[in-house]
Length: 441
Image (tube, rainbow, N blue to C red; front, side, top):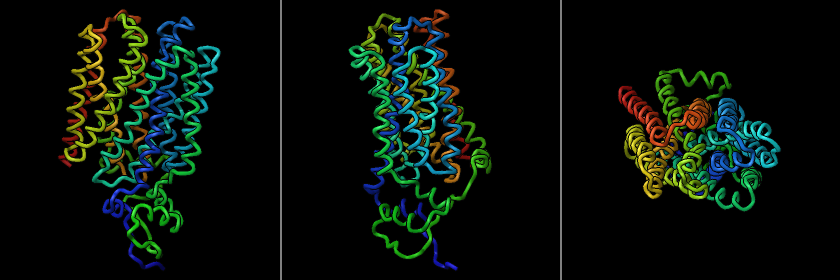
């Protein structure tokens, strides 16, 4: 019988300097979410080109957007609990290969119907990739730097989205919209072997599943090189225990977590509603107002760029100030910025308002995903992040389809952006409530 005291992995990670091994994990997951962001945003930038080639009505475009988002939602619901069962790394690599193949195939779509089906299949993979990248990174970050490291990693999504606008503005003009989907499919496929070679499984997950001691020790030597790990002293994590997909979902509501879970979900829904409405329709809105397609793509890319700046600043602040307060204030400022987009005819002022919207709304979405990873214990963390993302996709589906409804109803820019400012205020209210709930606990 082993009577040696246990080693708390969380304590070892928290008390040692951040290693190159951990930075490598952040970098690899950064690339994953960057490709996720590229693929997710590219279809919005491509929408005017697809619509022009096939002479589509706004309602048909809404079906194309909605199919991908339904896939994202279903993928998040399925792959989160599965990752808590079979491993974050396994599901992450499979999801990247999945959406890479599907995006590549989308480039050869002969009709809108085929493209809609392939966007749904692509969405399934995207829905499994990002939550597991967040979860895997979170489980290797020390508590004192978790928000900063996670938001830095999550900036990949905004960077990928911004790159989607730049690539579309260049490739689509010269080689057609299909070339953008080819690029968006090949890049993830090239990344898969790199992930297989360099990305480790979560050490907390390995402990929860009872992995061999030497396998865990081999990983821990990268995290705590100054500690001798050659003996048989067992590793443990306080919140690590085995779970099934069903019990992982139920754990989100146990032990008083249901209030926090619901408030997180409300914030995800509101935030993603705004982000996907803008990502899907902002180039079209701007073009309808008289802006050239090239300029519309570049201005829309400022939202993704702003998301990077906002996420980095807010992530640093969250390591020092109550996270819910930081995010709530950002959503309030984001609401004002959205309102301002519809109140100016100047391209410069429009670009500034779009950039500020990205800072506050996209930046907040990065941070709320980070917060979700810290709210749940190891045995249901992937489920918590994935289900928050999946529930949030309901907002993204509504947002992507709302653009078509607004255009069909003949709404003008000022009305559209005034209505879009309301969900940001609701997200801010949810964050204030979550902060109050946490202080009362």
